[in-house]
Image 1 (cartoon, rainbow, N blue to C red):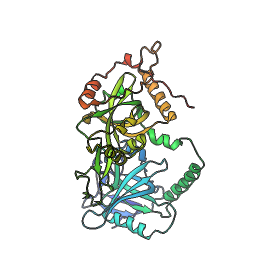
Image 2: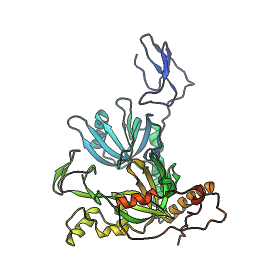
Image 3: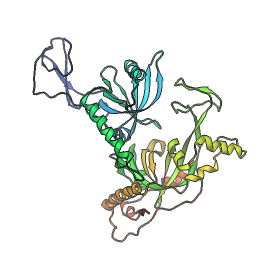
Image 4: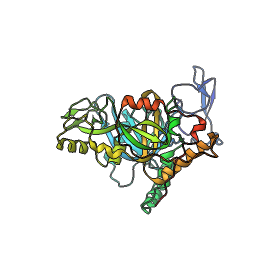
Length: 417
């Protein structure tokens, strides 16, 4: 017999096995397995509640705070369609979903799910937001510079778009209230932005970060003091659609994603030294953060460099010095195997910086054994010096402190004006 959703059944003659498959639809330790003599009959059992969706928080997914292999449900507003391929094998569409905290999450739909989504887009003529509910989806872990994302399961997922379903209606009402509320605010950081920045992460000092041996996501505060020059250029050639690195020259090229690029686009990739008290370490800044801090795109900086007579793409432009001296709150992914930490978000907002300061102070207080007489040390500003990759490795290698020393690396709060 065909099982129907929201119907109840009595089941006989089945196996009970451990629920330890690669992908699991629930977190129960056991699962029921059909065998040749299994008998199933429909039966009205009113005490069994309907299925409730387990919506994953976008910030938790991005911050790597999820159980591996457990299928989750997501709901959000379609922010942007990034890529689509409907011909040949591997039909897929990639788009960005946004939740109520304004956190973005990349979503990929394959085959029939892709066609269902694109058909809705083609037929849709309304002005209301497009709200998507995707059940039993897989979480794809972050890889290098590519953040975590989600995609549908092969056949287990259900895709619901702008349908009169209770969960979608509730989300739509809350989203409408959020939009109404946010339009009435000005000049202040919204609580949702702070929640999105911190998520469930802990604050770590630079000294802690230098001793971490496994990948984690955390927040900290520090000052950009040096630009690290190594075998990498300050930028890379990227596809205008998928933003992946291309080995093509500056002329036209076709990316592996199928997008024809009439001209190359440059994106930032920079390693910088971050100082906190007497400690320092390397952070990896990507295009979004560099563009915001410098105030110019990588393409614009390169054009100015060429106008000044410097045509060597790998030569570091003077505009990068605008990064130096910025004191920021950072949300990072510590990557010991790459000997750096990738910046997920950063902010110069004093209220965010002070929150991280408080978190660091609490952590120091719990470890300190000499807190009664330690002086307060502020963060240093800008020795505008560039160092080689090897120099910075030597410096970071000596950046370890004891618990007693940790109490003397206290940070100075920002005072709002």
